[in-house]
Length: 324
Image 1 (cartoon, rainbow, N blue to C red):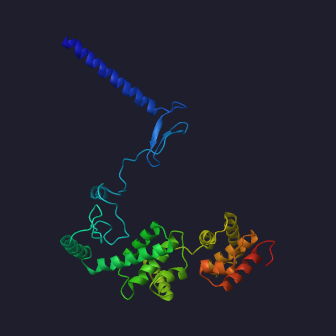
Image 2: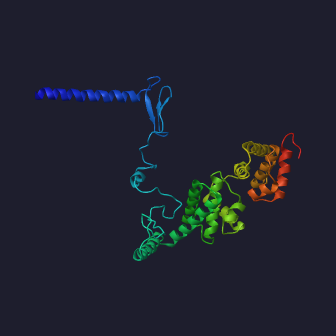
Image 3: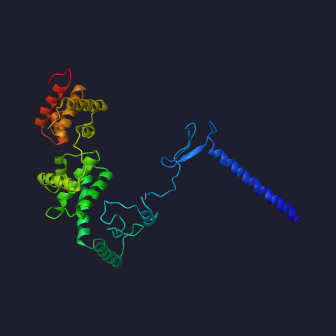
């Protein structure tokens, strides 16, 4: 009797294994050509190696959310905790105590608990900024975040600006210069490096230092850190200006066409990219019969109407078949 039960149990296990192997074979074969299916972990897809059919998409990536470039770095990193960020002086690794005196349910704390939380905040702040370098970094990164928010810059620009400032601090470039001036120049450089440039006037509007100091500090930081910042392209300003003026996509494309033609004719040489972009947007709006005024473009681009008129005539003269 026991032998019969043992035989039956072995048979059922064998059948289960065969069923699982058949299911595995089915998932590994292409439904179109019966080819081999491979996992493309980079794109999160299962793709047939023979015909290229995407069998499964949006698969879960169970690997780590970080990259390690050597074994030591891999051992030091962990899967737990919040992600690190360069936009905070402690990279987001310390504890934050909320300024509101409320518990997890939104109820107000008692007098004794409020006093206790105030003492905890004070000591937590002291531990977070233990030396002058950390206090400097905290103030500068706060300025970078404030200016980037005021200009509507994306997170990658804030990260880049924070990294540039950290490099400037490590290489001892700050003595003799204000924290606000260096942090503003880092935002200006990071925006240009990311392809979402802001004019010097726009940056100066949200900064606490003068335009001349920003320009002087920017040149110094770029030279000392050997940053690869390309000259600003007027076309990079066009989408933002067109969006603020609520112009159509046709006008935006026409403005870019005017600027490309101006480059070919050499009209752009020695001209402000912001002025050229604003004039191109104004000219494109007129050519596509859309209503806008020089005053409106001047307000959006933060340049004078005289500059727009001068650049406007130069762009039209450079355009084949058009007379200013």
